[in-house]
Image (cartoon, rainbow, N blue to C red; front, side, top):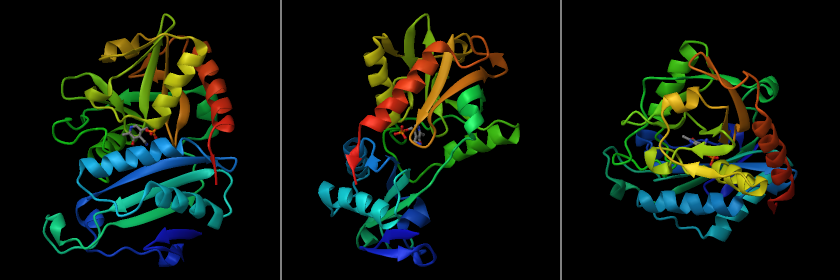
Length: 288
Ligand code: PMP
């Protein structure tokens, strides 16, 4: 495996980062998870734009143009002979000294990894996932805007641990007002009486690229969409539910907090979303 690090491609064994990198010391950095489908990068421009916005929000000045970063992403896939896979693009504040101040960091570091990924076993895409809500809340937007895809995932990890601890693979995180925000690494959607609902990004959800793709699919299917505050009650009583994320793709949910969603099987609309989503990823993308 070849990894892009410090302006060069190195082997996995040699892909080493300094312990003084503030990405390691403080989680001071940003990332993107991107999918490669059949030799084409899905929504590359959207990912690069979000990457730039994340950098801007944390005042990390990227010394690379969008074209340069785009070339790095595509070249990493080529170097690894990948046609399908998952790309992890990371920019850290770079090597500095002990102490929080980013002013001690010489220059940002760009890293790109391309590999295979299967977040959930295939059977869950067919049968659906059972999930629960957990006590750990999504971080308050005034503390860290949820739109920033930062290297700080500790509260999501705590939520994931809470779910795994009681035998579930994914968890719903609420925001500090008690509304549903998102899952630990995925956005959440419900369908109720033919309308698609999803939490507002201002309620603590990441502005997911797959979320946007699902909203586009809703447009293609002529389905009304409402972005609004959702309660756990709304999710429990939904006709259908599914999650979206670059790694997870689009996965049906059949149970939340012990309550069956709809019939307890992936719903008819969700199956249409899945079908349209797969058509979309195979049609669209930037050739590497
Ligand atoms: N929410 C969180 C917290 C995430 O980390 C992710 C990405 N894994 C998502 C939602 C989904 O975003 P995207 O569709 O852009 O991958």
